[in-house]
Image 1 (cartoon, rainbow, N blue to C red):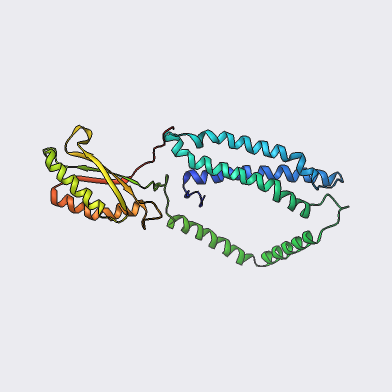
Image 2 (image 1 turned 120 degrees about the horizontal axis):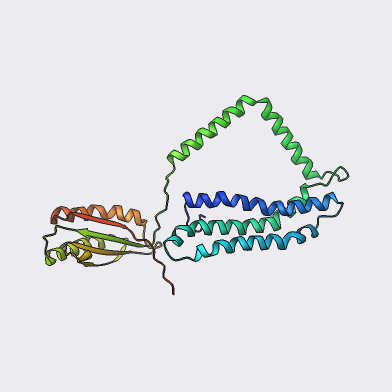
Length: 274
């Protein structure tokens, strides 16, 4: 999710929660077939994984295909659910790869089929280490309870301090602004205000260009502007930081020209079919 530019929000967390079921299911199918081979006295090498490999592959592919329409949608619903669908699809693919590679390897090393199978050295060391840690934890019950309470308090504090949002703001490199003045203003006076605000916005080092028009919503007192930011590699601030930096010069124009309201926000990306 980090490399895809996604943040933790209700949609991405919901995708991670749902994906835990798919991640466990793929590995369970492989491990259960390995145990079936071991219990019947067969070797789990190769055959156990090949028997269920195609099944795991087809199940994972069908699940990805289910979410593919949401990933490819271009309307508002698609933009809202793309992060959820893509995160879940990637988790399913990673689960499939792990189930067909890591799960069989660990299964052959750690699993045994009954008393007739000798315990491996790695299995013995893992069980002994787990037993020692469990006995130590039982002898220090008060300390373990204190650690558990500390972790709960830390999680609560993290939830309170961590920034939260329902839908994250996307930095598309484009901003939209609206200027509203008195209804009695003339077109020439509104044009002067519009040009002055555009000139001050262009003074920001992260802004590449500004365009717009005067006379929005069939009224001369309204105007719209479209701000294009420089590419992320060429600017030092995010779109939200640029909006905060533009507040001071825009407010100065409002005070000098009696502009009633100005608003600048991030533009929502609109995807059109080619």
